[in-house]
Image (tube, rainbow, N blue to C red; front, side, top):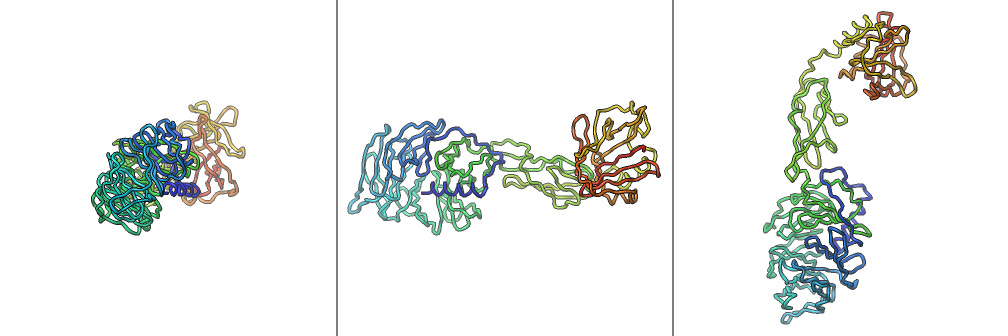
Length: 535
């Protein structure tokens, strides 16, 4: 029943778009079973015994998806138990038990079990074998019974509320609709959990319990108080036999209830883990798919921000990277899927995965990735270059001379002396001109003999973020302005785009009442391009 609920929940998760697809853990698909194992199953090594969607007992090889045996059983059997040595394969239903030998032949039919004056005739809770034993623990008729399938001997029988049975190294868990009771292998009561939505025990005696808006995990032999808790609205939870991993609402977690992020989109399938999470079983309406998980050794367990980002310089942009340690012990640099923030964006902020250092100060840089959080105190040192205001004053002084600060050539200079790659400055509506790049400038000639008639530069290529207000503070109001451009302009060099911006306004100036100069503003009124003309 739990597997069916998991499948229905998986469909609902798919509809609501909750699948995680960008993660460190890779889970390659290794096989597909020819039917959906939506109910009872038992995995022994690389083999799966299960009751398939055709209501019959089947045996599959998980590595290849090969159907090894079809037991040709009836639809009335709804519970399954397999001994660890596979010498006993047992199907149970409300009014009977059928066991098979290792060759798939019916070995025994049981309709009732007697123990002194007591009798068990209904097996609605099913059963499970004690570890490394032929003793089958059965639940039904408000009783709990230990029955040896080899000797046909009843070891003990006691009164107990009926429910689904799971055995562990030292205990027997009986789970009914809203409680779970723990017994020893001799049938002695140990502990009870009440008001639970679901409960599961591993072979190593660890327990996970789903309560009201809370999932809790309990260590072996320590059941009075959980050692880990997670606030989450959950319906089902299963712990795999080794006790290392848990699935909650079809999502894998570690035993300490840390979510495991996988890069596989299981698309609404119900999820089960085999022992030590060697395999992930994903089931839809028609098939069960087998994925190799290898114990989730690629899962992220810790993260830190490298010390290279500890000191930054204002006016500079830096690439971000987060160092992530995975369960196998490897540490890798991660860029995709990391969310970056700062507590003082006026000092430094993150845009498109890059840190933009703006002004002198101290800021806390924070990165989150797959449930992990890393922080580093970052010091932004003052920009050693002249301020934007001083830079603009210097540019204005040079423009009077027909050039820009740092430009190797002036207007009216010999175009043949420009040594560099071909480039363009153009818009998506056809405006533009060609030229040659040298340094951070593009030089254009439209005269014969060829003289330099236009010099174009982009402040962003010099790591300058100049506002319209800052520009007009130095150059004053323009002679003319057109605020209805709404075109994308791009700067190219050797066929590659150096920069591209959506331009909203172009303003015209006359330098020294002689040289035309055009300023291109984006929609945020940042200066993106400046062109100086000879006429």
